[in-house]
Image 1: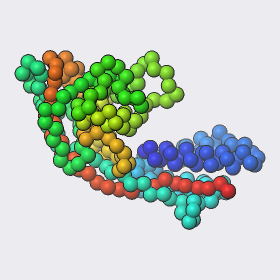
Image 2: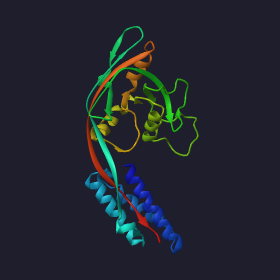
Image 3: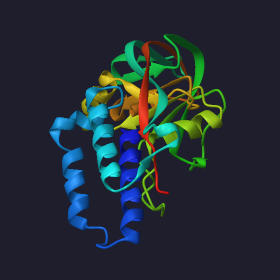
Image 4: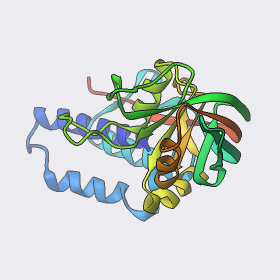
Length: 254
């Protein structure tokens, strides 16, 4: 999805460049028309590696060519991007509190790993608060080697030009040395988010992300974080990993 948005943005930038050199100026109606086409059901969400992606790139190529944009070096419009998709096959998530009590939260998480089979034993759980480009933004933060539970939103009082995207949070966690990250999702949104994981979580193959990543139901996270600390977890994750190739559209305005 991110690549589709980038490609769409590239198309608009290129069309704006052409419009700056000739009348009429860029048209709001034309932008809305392109958006209506690309967001229509017939493009099936523009998901990478599907016929919807190819239909999207074909449309953008056609619009760029009509605006006088040339294909990139070598006459090629498409730049391949290596992606990987991951689907959860199984997950066992058991947490032990300082008082010796144990909680089996396997049914309250959706998790995928960097490999087909990942096991974390006795990993410390920390409350990461809000995670952004600078890492954790509250006391407690992110500890190296820990499994981090974090808020899947930005702090209400944090001024910024745009919301922090999920990949930015995962990269920040990985750079801080976290073994894994679980985004805390409201109970009423959990099943919808689970459906997105069931379709396959797509990331760029070269992205630096934690060993395991996923979501946890908010009610379960509150119960977990309310238990006597320190909290340690055993997490066993089975993941279906598949490689695929997506494409950027590259054009040149000479």
